[in-house]
Length: 354
Image 1 (cartoon, helix red, strand yellow):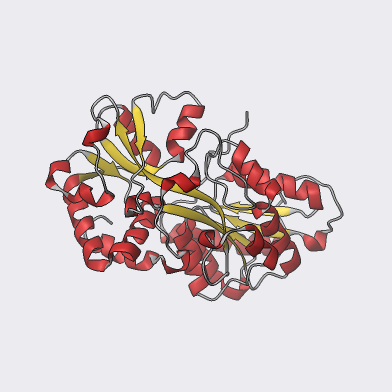
Image 2 (cartoon, rainbow, N blue to C red; image 1 turned 90 degrees about the horizontal axis):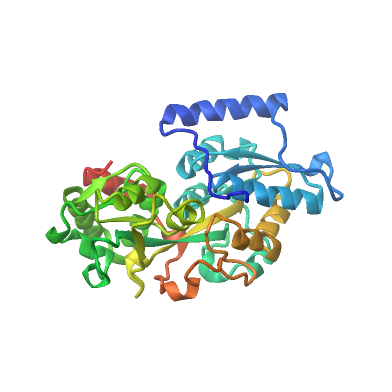
């Protein structure tokens, strides 16, 4: 079975972002980029769109293939990380070759929205995606969601020993016992939720305690592996890393169980993957149609039945049968438009985590 779990990355440095922008500009001038997807439908070359993609490569490709088959509209996909691609779009401004931007986490969407670069989403997208899964501004929409969890070593911890709140991990009793990946956009989105729910002072204090208490491990998969190996007792990750590993061999998660904080706790944060149409797009109708497809029943069913193990958020499509239902997560209600990635990076830098 084809997995929807892979993700390619540009790299971390600003030089990489600038180099990527140069390559994209040259490709746009030369017309050398090959469109993704198969032929079909009634689309023409003038309908073709470019998607800047920070979602899982194979999930987006599955969406693209089905969309092109249905509409005949060809799609070029350019892959990268959330904040690298959002920064690139901001740098390109009205000259960006992108028609659509897809992310893993919503702070990158907010960055582009704050720069005034998104068009409004169509009425159809608004109908398909409930209000809790899109910003109040309607400048973009949720396309998927992922839950924050505490992945723990079930051979060492019982449920009674688990933290009741993510805020409890600041206690000295957790020193040296847990891990996270502070440099990743995934974790920074979780901190963005904490900032919105608990305020700046409490968030900075928690981050400073994290510097003392936690191990910094690069990547959620690596953090989960460390838990599985017994190196650390628990880690803050997103849920789908566990389910993706269980779907394959389970070798990196056999000793791991997931703890859902629930109770509207900051640790119950559900991060929304976003999709938006660039205001500068010369193919507005096709771009909106693509976003309508992704958030529609066909697109969300691809997500439900695939192996990315993220949550569908549109058109009433339920979660993969392996997952706890989205409504049972008891996530806090947060307007995605208020998640402030720039402030989070500042606070994490102050705390010595970045």
